[in-house]
Image 1 (cartoon, helix red, strand yellow):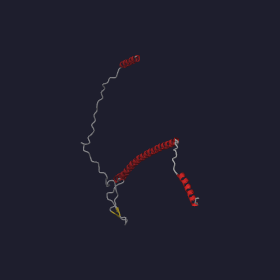
Image 2: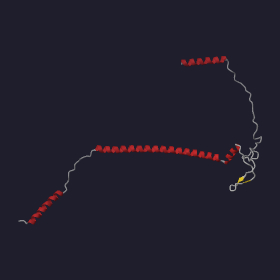
Image 3: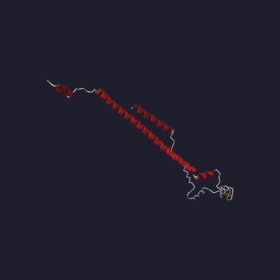
Length: 190
């Protein structure tokens, strides 16, 4: 008879053997299934079309931005030129020589002897005399007198009128008219 320990051992070995048999790897036959192509082709097509449309939209927006930038640069150049022109006009208006000349044309006179005012004391120094046009300081010197050689009197040459053309007589005019009619008839008959 067998001992109970031996029976337990054989039982354990049999269970272990069954577990080992179940755990063995076996080669499973490969199943040939193909993934459906329509969803993949659709996905790739959508990605491609979306990329092209996105690229076109991006390119269009970049061109619009470029046009806007060039338009703004042109406006900036125009405004810079206008600013420069206005600055030059302002400098010309602020020119002391021009202001003095216009004041003199309006009747203002530069005094020959100026009088100074002391701001601390409020007193004037110098001789107070009225300014008149006769004793005023002239801003512009008088124009130089040109010698007669540089400014001669104009020379006028009179040419007599001569007529060399004789007006046509009425017979010449009639002859030309009939010749013209005859040429027109010949051209029509051809």
